[in-house]
Amino acid sequence: MGKMLSAARSRMYRAAKQVDLHEELVQRLDYPAETLAVSIPLRRDDGTLMQLKSWRCRYDDTLGPSKGGIRFHHSVTEDEVQTLAFLMTMKCSLMGLPFGGGKGGICVDADDLSLHEKEALSRGWVRAFARILGPDRDVPAPDVATGAREMAWMADEFGTLTGEMRPGSFTGKPVPLGGIEGRTPATGHGALIALEAVRHKLGLPLGPLKIALQGFGNAGSWFAKEAARAGHKIVAVSDSSGLIRHGEGLSTDALEAAKQNGGSVADAEQAGSDTLKTSSLIIEQECDVLALAALGGVIDGDNAASLKCSAVLEIANRPILPDADEHLRRAGIEVIPDILANGGGVTVSHAEWVQNRQGLDWSEDRVADYLRDTIENASAKTLRVMDENQTDMRTAAYCAALIRLCEAISARGTAQDYQRRQQ
Ligand SMILES: NC(=O)C1=CN([C@@H]2O[C@H](COP(=O)(O)OP(=O)(O)OC[C@H]3O[C@@H](n4cnc5c(N)ncnc54)[C@H](O)[C@@H]3O)[C@@H](O)[C@H]2O)C=CC1
Ligand SMILES: O=C(O)CCC(=O)C(=O)O
Image (tube, rainbow, N blue to C red):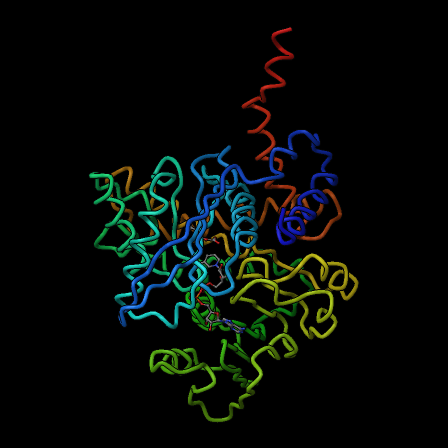
C-alpha cells in the first residue's frame, strides 16, 4: 500500500477507536475495491506520440455507485488517486449521499496541452476506462484542471461507445448537455456554508473575517466571490505563480480579470496591494482563516508551526498531512476538514445525477436549498459528534462518516457472517 493511503487511513482508525466501531467492519475499508491502471496514447499536434499513465479507483461502493472527480496533473500517482478515492468514500458518507467513493487521474501537465490535445486525451481516457464506468457503477466529475468542457467530451464519448445517451454517467457537464445550474460554484459556495455553520466552534471574532486563500481555480475563486459578497475580507491570495495582499480586502473582480487575461493573481491591478513572488508564503499570512484550495500536502509536520491563523478551511483535498495534526492541535488551530468543507461539489453532482435519472430539470433555487441543507446537516452532525466525544472536528467528521458506512457494511453482511449464520 502507498504511503499516502496509509497515512490517510490512520485518521480513519483514530476515529473508529473514538466511537468504538467493530474492527472487522472498519477493515472492509482498508483497501480499494478496484483500481484500474491504463497507459493512454496521445498523438500530439506536432505529430509526436506520448504515453500517459492514468488510473481510476473505485474505493468502495457500499452506499452506492462510486463517485469522484478526474484530475489532469503532472503529480498524479496511483497512491494519490487511491487516497483521494478513500476521501470521497468518507465525504459521500458524511454528506448522506447514496454514493461510494472513486477518483481518477492522468499524469500530465495540462498547461502544456492544446485544446485539441485535451479533447483527444479526455476521449482517450473514457475509451480506456469505459468498462468500469456508468451511472450505476462509477460516475466521474471535474477535479483539478478539468471542468464542464472535459465532462462534455467524456459524456459524449461514453454515449458513442455504449450506444446509449445516459447523461447520469458524468456530472459537472455543461447545462445544455444535462448539467445542472450551480455545479461550477458549488464547491466554493459549500465551503462558505460550512465555515458559517461551524464558526462559533472556532473561537473566531464576530463579524467579517480576514481570509488568506491559496488557489484561485474553480473552488478557490468561487469561494472568494461568495465570501467577499458575504462581507468577509480576502486579505491575501496565491496561485501557482505568485501572491497578492491587501489589508482591507482584495477585489475579486480584479483577481478574476487578471486570471482571464492569462496571468497570475499577482497581476491583479488594485491600488494599495503588494505582491510576493514566493506563493508558498501564503500559509504564513496573518489572518483569521487560512483557506487552502489548491493541491494536497501543503502543510506538514515541518511547516505547521509557521501558520498565523486561528482556523484552517480545507477546500482542497488533503492539504494538511497527518503529521501536522498534533502541531495544529497544540497550537489551538482548529481545522474544518476537507470531507466537510469541500462536500458542496459532490452534493450538487448528486443533484445533477438525480435530475438526469428523473429526466426533469431542477431549478437554481432548488439546487441552492439542497446544497445549503446538505452542508448544514453534515456540519451539525459533525459538531454533535465533536461535543459527545470531546474530539477535534476532523476526527468527529470521520466518526460520523464511519458510523453510517459501518451500519451499511454490517447490514449487507460478509461471507463470514453468512457462514456463521448457516451453522
Ligand atoms: N472542482 C471541484 O468541484 C472540487 C475540487 N476540490 C479540490 O479543490 C482543489 C482545487 O481544485 P479546482 O479548483 O477544481 O482546481 P483548478 O485546477 O480549477 O484550480 C487549482 C488552483 O490551484 C492553484 N495552484 C496550483 N499549485 C499551486 C501552488 N503551489 N500554490 C498556490 N496555488 C496553486 C492553481 O494556480 C489554480 O488556481 C483540489 O484539491 C480539488 O481536489 C474538491 C472538491 C470538489
Ligand atoms: O462532484 C463529484 O462527483 C466529485 C468532486 C470531487 O472530486 C471531490 O469532492 O473531491
